[in-house]
Image (cartoon, rainbow, N blue to C red; front, side, top):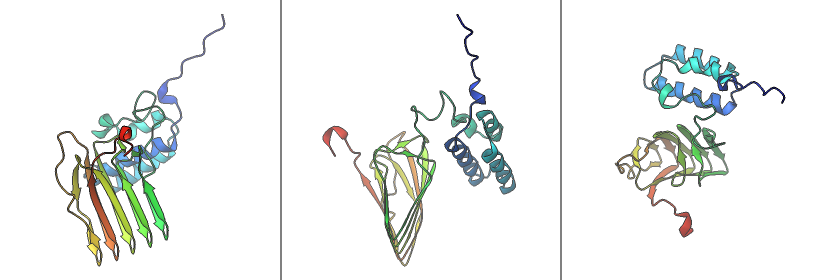
Length: 205
């Protein structure tokens, strides 16, 4: 029998762009929480985008509590399902439209922008790899609709400037449900947040 191929250390496997972006998102969250100052974030982001392997990414998170809650992606770790990665962190509609619905994977922060256009962000079937996500909605002479599950905990802090930013969907959810923060602004436009029952595939809803 021939020699078996040497087993590769998973830490030495090549990181993808999606892996680097997930780690960058952890750093941005740490900065927002006051754990890192701007110089530290800038220095670490340079290291993240220069990283080639998972081993290169690990030191960037070594002193952050989220390093254990959301480890550097690798074989057997996040994402939760084979091949599952969060969607890109933004969507823009300029005199057009965008839609995020169905079983899409939500990043920790998602930004939707509509300028003379419209957008729909439907979270009812979405998979959230994080227990808490932030939706940033910016509508300029346009409109964005955010649909949240009726059992989610929702906090709305957006502002309407010569426009409307609905807050009536804010409220607690069932114990253990995802926490969804919705922020941003509407200028000569509107951001509407609706609570709806989760879709049931077997019912064709």
